Length: 210
Image (cartoon, rainbow, N blue to C red):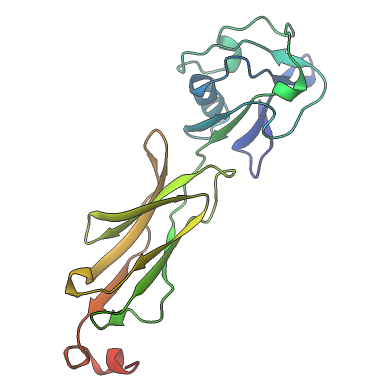
């Protein structure tokens, strides 16, 4: 089995090799159970989304499987129920695809405002970025302060968190992570320490921007 047309080897149009020829899979009844089997068979982690209607482009040649029905526990897509290899009433406009988690890499948290030491009333801006987006799948990014999550946004690869009119309650250690459906989560990012105080409460170096 291979995944074709995606941004990496863990997402794309599903193709299987039969009788020495690569062919596609029809999206009739294609769902997350089928996707889970494909992700397992390709050693690509967990299922993020089932992609119907030739989402990764139309294949060519034979359509090897149609009406696939997996429980999700099978080790191979051909072990699932289907019409029979090569038997279909489909076309390549309905080629099935998948997005799998692959290896979720640690995100990077960056301070995009100028200083990590600020006075009350100033604004702070962070950017949380994943180094390897999952084939345009939407991820939920969360920002954490001293442990608990304080904000979340959805995007494919990067989000900006804005903290406005900060006070001493915003002081602390910040980190971020991202996740997909089915509770597929990355590890936490690097940390950024924010200090909030009047200049006479901060170090000489921290006060130099005032």
